[in-house]
Image 1 (tube, rainbow, N blue to C red):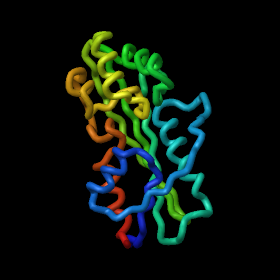
Image 2 (image 1 turned 45 degrees about the vertical axis):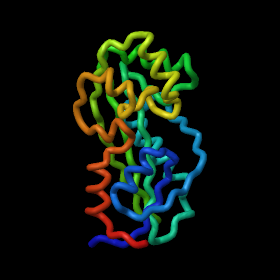
Image 3 (image 1 turned 90 degrees about the vertical axis):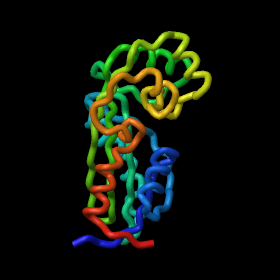
Length: 194
């Protein structure tokens, strides 16, 4: 039987916050600074699962009985390597240059935590870029400064319009949240209170 919960979204991402507003749920934002470090041996979805759960663990002992915490993490997985948020302009340029004319995976994990239970789901989307010229990459980085985005790009921005030739899977997952899976989980498992 579904239980009544108040949603706590632990994400500073404007894109994730926007999706939750679009769901029509009442929710509260609570943020904590987390050192997003993971063991070297983790691969792909193991990394995002680990980091989403690490973010949730930071709230242990702080949730009320009627609160459901939602945390999330997204990486770009390419050539057996996780590409997170770029450190600076040069790093962002290098990342986009490597993704040019290639296919990568965008992996997002979402963790749902209450005082008595924890669940983690994930989604994987394959994204293919056409050849990106140096000029196109420079233009994008100067105009959009995507330093808060895994893989140094936002699919909803200019680079997505001119550079992506194919996407296999959830578009919103690439933006930062697999909305269909998250909505389905929330509406299946809980009812909501204000």
